[in-house]
Every structure is written in structure tokens, then in C-alpha cells.
Length: 504
Image (tube, rainbow, N blue to C red; front, side, top):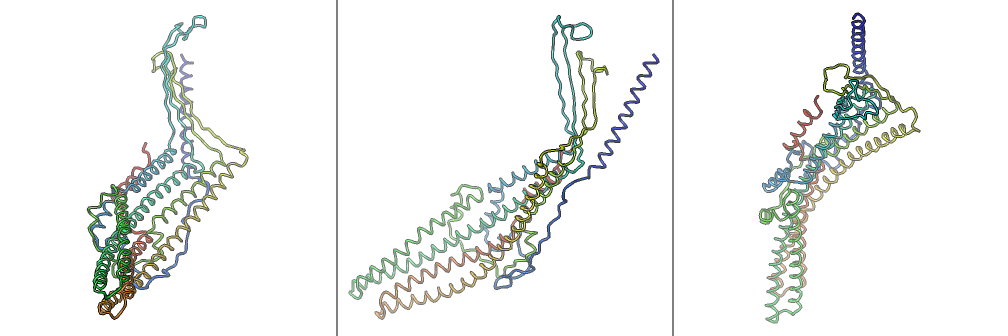
């Protein structure tokens, strides 16, 4: 009896010592978790000019550009309505939103590596042993029900920061996917506005061309009357018909382009291509830019352009991967545990049938032929590539703004010259028509002036639309349209912040 009591006391003391050792080890693990290898990411510095090369020319000025809903500066309710429909209906945006959710799930996978991996298994089987090999259990039974249950856990000690850097990389990748969605908004808004302005420009060109057709049809009537009166040769009639047919042939091509613009707008807002015919077929004026356009300063590019922000986040994600690869140079530490029951009856209370084990484990790849170091070199090279892409994205963004600003200012001047040419061409047609009717000039001058009028009016209308298109290019180059986020994205960003990691 005394010996039994002594054995129990020894076992109890062993358990206390084991528990104390386990607590000491866990505290030590908690203290060394922050020992991360590899470079820490630092936002690279990049010198950006203080002023635009093309700024402060006619129509452009420095100041805070109205980028939130820039299309409202065009004062077109139909365009505003298209923009509202596009946010919820565009399929490219839906795909980009699904990529955000995918990236969020991948971050959850990386975050899950902070916690133990615990598995459970159980088996129940009815078994009978041959009498030639003895009984199954100590009580002599040949047939028993075998029961087994076990739980095992595996917890990697993040000594070298592999897990923490994996989480940081996934987190940066998630942020990059959000910026990709915002970049999709910038592109979508600009494309809708560009197609809408193109449609209105084509419709105006059709009107102008039809007006010139009417003028030339009237001229044809004059030549036919003069021919019947033997005041003009038949050549004048043939040339008038040629000029009229040439001008009429332009209209079907313009209508085809206008139909294509309507189809494109339908797809952009997520409807069937022909869904918008009733709403967009009636002619409306070409949206006009505001009297003054503000372009901000170049430094705003890094804050406003989502593609620049996404490139920076991908650089951060890639930098963290260097540390992930570097951790493989060092030993990996694990805490292993196993707890279970195995027996031939249902007496789970009996302590003799319970079993457990726990303790630390270490694994170290001592020699691998240089594979780990070459993986580190590869990740470092990928980081240099990501840095070059980031810097190149900044340069391209600056280039986009400079090109759009120059195009806008130069086209504005061209539009004014074309307007003056149209005024002169119209007056010339009036004068030459009077002279022709009076027999003071030949018909060739009439043809030349009417052709010139048709060409100049078409060019002028096209230039009016191009000026607005160039303004759209400026707003797109500045990264306008995504801020503030749409409600759908705003809610997802909040969910990422509050529910992005598993909770035990």
C-alpha cells in the first residue's frame, strides 16, 4: 500500500515537472517569435518633379483637380446615369472584386499558420482472433470491440519569421488586389466617358454631313435647271451629282460607328449591346469641358493613381518573400503533441488506456546543393524586377499626364482655328453660289467651296469631341474616379480590417 502511494506521488511530481517544463518552453517561444530574417520592407524614395512641363498653358492651371466624380464637370445627366449603372453591372469589376475575395482568403491561409494544426481521428472495429493465436485481450475473449481515438497537434515556432513574413506578403498582395479594383474603376469611367463623347461626336458629324448633303442637293437642282435652260453644260450636272454622292457615302460609315459606340456602352455597364438604343439614339450635344481645368501637382500621382499604389504593394509583397526563403537556411522548430485512447472496451474512464506524448522537434536541412541560397537569390532578383516595375509605372503615369495635357491644350487651339475656317468656308459658299447663279464664275469654284465646307465642318465637329476626349485622358491619367470607393468595395475593405484573420 505504501509502495503504491509512493508510485502515485512520483508520477504526480513527474507531471508537475513536465507541466512546468512545457510552460517554460512556451514562454521562451513567445519571446523568440520576433527574430525574423531577411530585409524589412521600406517604401522606396522617388524624386518627382514639382511642376508639369505642360502646365499653366491655355486651359490648364495648378490646383486641386476634381477627381472624385470628374465626369460631372461635363454636366451631362445621361453620362452620370451610365456611370452609376456601370459600378454595379460591369463584369470586369465583378471579376476584380472576386480577386479581392480570393486574395483575402489567401491571407487567411497564411494567417492560419500562426496557430497549431490539430487533427483528430477515431476508429471502432469489431474483431475476432483465431484460437490458434490466442485471445485478443487479457480476459481470454476471442472477440472484442476495438476502440481508438487520438488527437495530435503540430505547431511551428516562427523563430525566423517565415510565418510572419508570409502574412505580411499576403497582406500586401490583398491590398494590391484592392488597388487593382480601383484601377479598374478609373479605366471603366474613362472608357464609358470616351465612348459616350465619341457617340455624341458621331451624331453631330452625321447632322453636319446631312446639312451639307442638303446644300449640295440644292446645288444639283440649280445645275439641272441651268442645263435645261442651256446656260450650263451637262458637265456641271455630273460634277454636282459626283459631289453629292461622295458626301452621302460618309453618312452610313458614321452611323455604323455610332451603333458600335452604343453597343460598347451597353457592354460596359453590363447589359446587352442593343439595350441602350432607345436612351442614346436621340441626338444630344457633345459634352464640353469646363472653362478651366485643374491638374494638381505631379506628387499627387503616387497618392492618386491606383496602378502606382498596386505596384508599390506588389513590391512590398515580393520583398517579404526574400525573408521567407531566407528562413530555410536555419533549423525549423516545432512543438508536437499527441493525446488519445486505445482499448478493447468502452471504459473511457480507465486511465490505463489513455496515452499522450508532447515535446519539441527540430528539422534542419544541412546540405541541399545550394538550392536554398539560389531560391533566395531568385527572390531577390524578383524584388529588383518589382522595384523596376514600380518606378516604371510612376514614369508612365507622369508621361500619361504630360501627353494628355499637351494634347488637350494643342487640340483646343486647333479647334479654334477650325471654327474660324468653318466661318470662312460658309461665307465662301454663299458668295460663290451667288456668282455662279449670275454667271460670273464657273462651277468648279462652287464644287471646291462646297467640298471644303463639308471637310472643315466635319473636322471642326471632330475636334470639338477630341478636346473633350483629351480632357477625359487627363482625368484618367491623374487616376480620377475611384475615391471615394463604391459602397460594395468600402464594405469589403471594412470586412478585411475586422474579419481578415481566423479567430480561435
